[in-house]
Length: 194
Image (cartoon, rainbow, N blue to C red; front, side, top):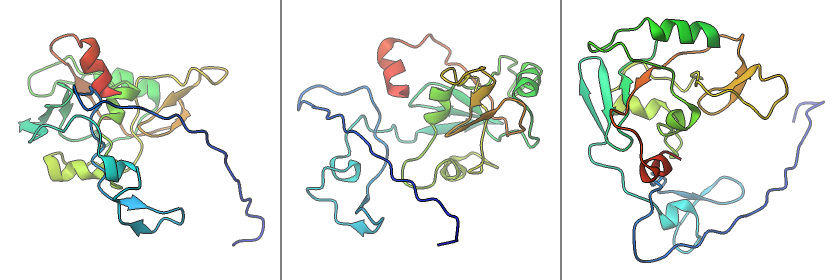
């Protein structure tokens, strides 16, 4: 350990969830099929109760993504994503301006995704966002992408959510646009995005 390094111990609370054997949940599976012990070593999943053991949730459609030109449609959420994120990083305000000027696949109704929409793309198997390059997307990195969601619980409201973290709106980050879904989301579909 480097001198001066501060070790922080966190205390987490648990919130048990009870499922039933009949009916389907509207929450999608995470895709996680591996289990780990407290030290981070991979262990057999059977009987652990971890996500990799239980694999609860709605199965992802196969294939989940389909492409047409520079667009990729997500069969799980109904959202259409630009096939590749923007190559230039921007501030939060610049991202809104640039998104309004975009025409991709003949459509000009592109926008920044909200945080829930952005999180719907994250793979919980350890790849974060880069796994999408194997699904037909191009140029996706595990960097940070702006969402349209302000981090409202912090004073000043000058911070916005990225995909998995947050930063000041004046910082420059990548931009990845979305459109749709074409029909309004019903409650069940909205829960799937959570």
